[in-house]
Image 1 (cartoon, helix red, strand yellow):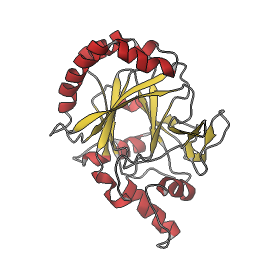
Image 2 (cartoon, helix red, strand yellow; image 1 turned 90 degrees about the vertical axis):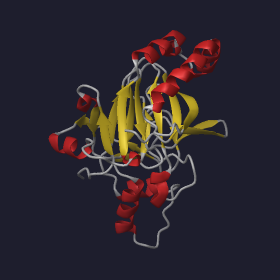
Image 3 (cartoon, helix red, strand yellow; image 1 turned 135 degrees about the horizontal axis):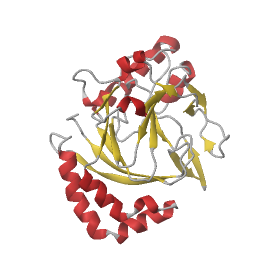
Length: 274
């Protein structure tokens, strides 16, 4: 199946196209890698290949799209990068080491808050954003988002975030988020370059008008009907960031091939100056 025009990708990084690849679709999540997936969860196939000229033409930002249809990738300023490095989060080898390490650098964190505010203000016309969390994930996971239920980590595969109540038709109003890679290795964001309303309409074509489509079931329905729709993977190098409308498109991070702990800093809000 061919890519359709939808969510667009934007960056000022040199040779950004080399940080993107795509594949031939999805499989249902399994326990092949030693983790448990929730029923009806889907993960990308592992047949990644570089973008061809047609894919580049479809994916790369060319006009003034609404922020809910843009993924932007860039690098944090040198001052921020150097400050992050002094905290030595990239040296943590266990998820339980990350938060204590942050607390050890309380004064540095206070200074970072001011510097990050100055940096983020360039992306947000009305400074509408707030700290969300520092995420920690194990290496070599096909996808990383999971819930801890009954003393077991249950992975959910490609999904949409639900940062607020919305319907597929209103997901574009939910805002977006910025995620900064604080680890020592590249991580990857796996995405489907279609907005939720595009996916909704595609499901309707095959399932008819009777089926109820909600943010909770739309991912499972889409991948059931369109398992061959390509997934796009974006490399996010250390101290690079992405800004993405994670309520409005299917995605998850993947740490396959990594050996070090995956650590990110996440802010949510409205980053509308992209």
